[in-house]
Image 1 (cartoon, rainbow, N blue to C red):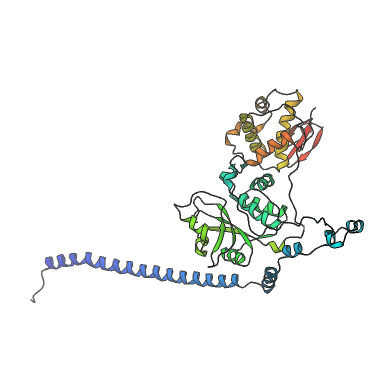
Image 2: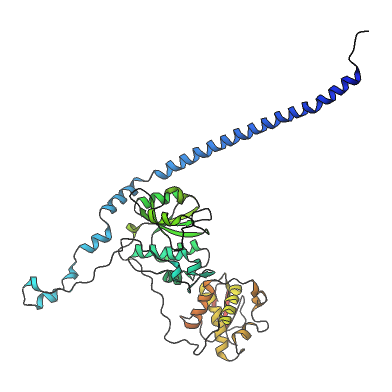
Length: 416
């Protein structure tokens, strides 16, 4: 009988080898999986890099018409040319006819030339801590209106403050950038939304200005902050005006504001931009002037406490936040009209909490009023007014047959 390895010893050896053999196989599988992941990442990165290169090439290829227009306007700015050419109005004919002195000695009264603002002014939102905007004030939440005030002043050659822009924007709800676009349209200031950060930076280098929205990943702490890109330094960096005048030394932003931003510092955290071209402004730009209030309030002697203002703002927010501004003001006027009529409760609080009068009362704790509701209260008190004094009802339906009219989804009615 040939010699044979003892079966017991052979089984022990096989059992010892099974475990290391399993580990070797798993190691191979893991290495193979890792290799597949690395190759996949490399392919995706290559595809993304190719896409960025193609996108960059598309952005850099500006139409010839735009280039020609830019070169022409840089050589002879329309505003400057208009102010240097004398007009017939400069020398009134009647003055020349009445005088007997030599023509060269006649004192001539000339019209004051239109002032051209060649540089974007710098406004700080911290100078307006008491003017409501959004859910706070201009100081806390108004970088968008401060930025637009800078650009609007530069574009129109008419001085606008952040308070002016906030007053104009208050009647429009929505996001801060939504208000920025609506107010730019209403002020007839030509603008376009940048497709990407490269288009915005290219426009600034062509002589335009831009308002940029910087997010939480930007060098500006806090995120959702609007800045103005105004030009280029001698070494090719972007000049920036920041509405926030806080001390940025801890973030290193102060040096960038002084010396200019490299492109990379603006690309990081970029959320969007709006481009403004002064060469496209009309010769006689639209100038916004706020509507004057009546000489006297039609509610003489009515002075609201802070608590009453807050209560009314909560109610208007819950009852009419989705209504147009006039509709929100009308809700406030209904309350004032009831108080003045003498046919209802004798205080703001009791009118609002009267039984079965305002459905939203039970949910006032959910209200988050903005500047729109507070402005509606102010105009309802001081004018210009929306409703007649004897309109005291509103609802989604007509509460009686004496209908005054409809604003938004509310039907307003006279007293019975």
